[in-house]
Length: 335
Image (tube, rainbow, N blue to C red; front, side, top):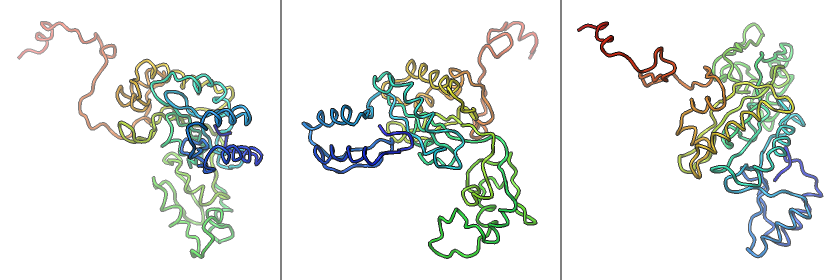
């Protein structure tokens, strides 16, 4: 299991490598897609010795396998990143400690993974690689410093923080490189001023990444919760589906824990063996997921307008239910 944000001391890394040079190949993967250190290549008699050394001498927990909570993973968050919308490291650390039992004692139909992205850039790919994705966002307007926008246009600031400065790409063109690349077309540049139609902004982060000194995330920050991503197993790969569009991230994180535990209760009851929560969600419907989590359906939950012309009602939503008097119906609708 890795520390939040993958901050290691050199002393710790040397200790791990001393064990692995002695008992294994010395070859590691830093890190697997799960976020754990992967130690590659050893022999069966060495496994128990490695487990003992890592847990007792290095005071390090082991990553789980089977139907349990896998090691939660997060980005650097507020420790180094100006785009972070919440403290990913604190939330990750808190949930890791609170759900120790789920980490060590398999109780789920299959694996379950948390990942925490501090902003929509998605540096730990939460939306594609975790069952429960927590992605930082904001709900007020993007902040624009018009003087610094002019400085970017004049070439005083390097686009992208100088990340492409290894060669001369020519003069920075704000229309071609920022405005025209907006996926929803919600930006305009006229009269030396940059404008954003925030209602249509999808928070792709491109303008912020390109001009970080001039364009910044909003001040009213929080997170979106998504559910159901997985790599191809039985049913093919899928991305997370939006469940909670916005929640303020505040200690002790009770709102987030309530969503998690409602999902677990439903999944453990209804999930088939070796069925990820995303597959259960697809099999039993997203509507059922909303019911068990006590979340009201919102327009943000809809990917596209329905193509099926049939609308199905629940009995309790129909006045008088489904039972009706056929004779009275025929009287009202004479042929």
